Image 1 (tube, protein in one colour):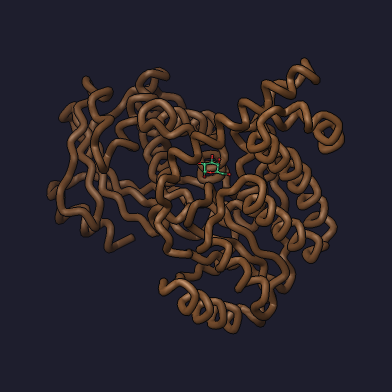
Image 2 (cartoon, protein in one colour):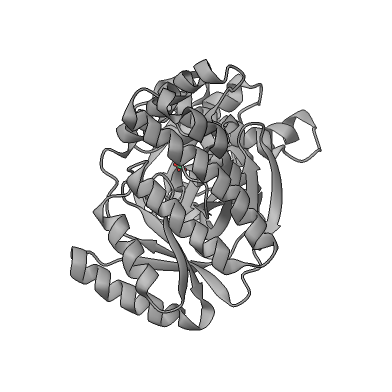
Length: 391
Ligand code: GLA
């Protein structure tokens, strides 16, 4: 924190109170590509953060910088719609634009970011950047208006998602922003994306650890393929609605309903996508149950099934993720392993016996390097609190 504060003073000079907010990245334990189908997800916030140091000014502008980027960007509060094409700063501009539209009073300020969430690795570095910015702006707005109730983090997650959808053109679901905003120490979040009802589930992993492995594979074409999957799900839904007029999203289709009507989904590719979503929602429910009764091996098996479904039916894994997962499953102490996040590269998540974590990472590291020529990175993490002001 001291380092960030002194970097802030070096960059912007001046005096006056500097405050610090931070938001974590997230790992999704199971429930992939279900959120935009109204389904269930089961993420946890992780111990890697997007942190901002901020000081209010009276310039009518937000100056934005990051410790590892020499240049700063300036956002004029009267023209927040104009920054869609920035390569860095567009997410923050989008958040400010959406909050302003929602009636928040956007404060002028100088902001410096420090990020430890690995970028582009499927651990929600962009959601962390958005959510911390949204929390900071909403806090200032409430102070200005004399509102002393705490910021509503669920609406903030929704606004951050809107910024990504409408301003940055990424059609993501709500999971990432929700997890970054609502994470809780030692708990995972069982979230129903149809109505945003949620429940915390203790991550009682007795003797096991969550190990995230970064394939270091860049996520090529991830956005266009992501949007294509959304469209394929919409098409399967339209076909299934002819059989079940009351359903409004794929999550409304149970496994039994899907089995009865699968052949009514005319396109075989869309049928596979829908089968993944329907069975994945069911796996989330069974995972939460397994975890609640302390059956970690059952949870691990469901993680494996989830990956296999994402590989064979949803087709979002690819060689690097598949290699990482199969090496992980063979490595010491691993009882379940799957890709996490959107896929097409990024990270895997595995459940590994605590006393085997070192051997696990050593074996997977060398096997993966040999198979792909890339050096993976590992993050052994617990569940952390969501976004908050820390100084
Ligand atoms: C990305 C999106 C999320 C979710 C996952 C896949 O992380 O931002 O909304 O759809 O992919 O589960």
